[in-house]
Length: 65
Image (cartoon, rainbow, N blue to C red; front, side, top):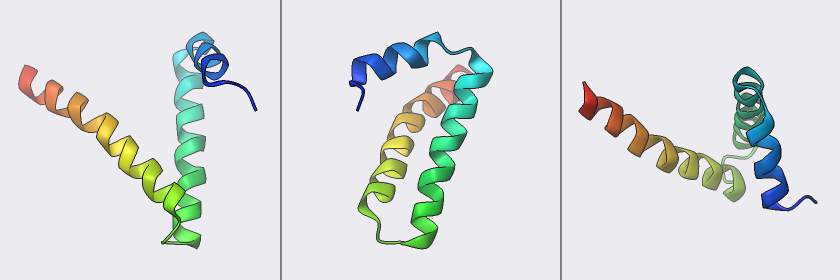
């Protein structure tokens, strides 16, 4: 397995549309896991962490308006 630093570097080198494609693939992977097994802790944690990452950005954008 690659290190988080290596993966971070690869992500940083991707153009925006390809990075969105990667995020979509990752989201779909965990969404499918959660549909197949609603008690899948890894999938639950993925969505919890994703929500925690999105929420501050969403709040910040609302405050700017």
